[in-house]
Image (cartoon, rainbow, N blue to C red; front, side):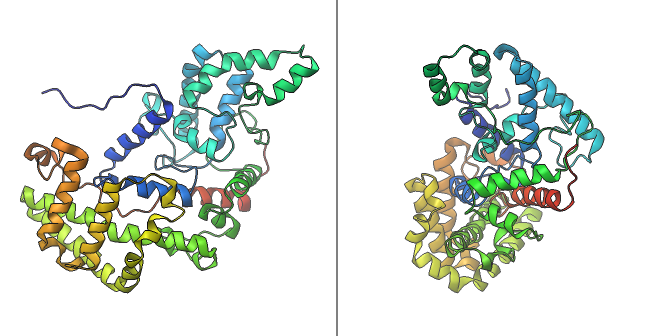
Length: 412
């Protein structure tokens, strides 16, 4: 039998980037979006921590990528060579970082030169969101644009009218923010993931300037980070604006209640596979979840009674949420909070049916709850991690920046 593969036509870079994120999530078995809740999850993540993604590691890549491309631009590398030259430069950076750093946080530490997705692609969207990348377009469009960019930049005989046109012509603008700190002497040799103070100030100021009303910015203003599992557990929360607290409460409630749907999905699969150890594991996890829901039941009921406020909240409104997704979420909330209640869901046939119908609607003949072959291939864990909205990445970014502000040395 020929193994299944993912494929796509590489016309739109943004679509390709999103597809690669999906592929990454399928490798992380406890983060898969098995029930089609990813749009709501990502809406909150973008609202709280703009510019982040689950595949990012350390924040200094937000500088490595533009520094690398600026060096290539200075050498006027043509469009038909830039992709390979950039790959060579990023492969060298990987080798340098692996010499100077522990592997944790170094992209490509396992794949090395065979890395399929380079840091430049992983950070491309975030660079635009933070205003570090001025060029408005995909990475492929940027590569194709460079030849005309060099020609326009080298023009020295502009009349006054042409000079005015140049100012308004996006093709003649720099591709990178003019305030970008200079790379350290000898970059990329002997570099590390630690920020200098100048770099930390720059990244902090970019975030505060463009995204000053986000949780990411609030954490950087506080200049003190605490280790927590979820953003709503951070002691900064009571000091946030009422608007931010409201959206964060929406994020928490959605995360906690919908986590039960993922756990029950895995329990149902385990029962179908007749794996006693898997069944015992998910029964315990589900019981723990139902106890948590019961502790917060009054607050969650108040939230559910006004669910339209959730659907019209600032964060959720950032993404188009389909009617089937809304119906599924509200059906689950009713099961968990009204009847039969969280603790009774494992023996609730309508709840099991709702999960099955949702999976079939999303996956058709690949639905594990309906397709014996798909069930047979299941390895015992899919999408069980509670939504944290990229908090691990965001908190690492903040930690890097705050450490740079506190301990960073002056740029060489």
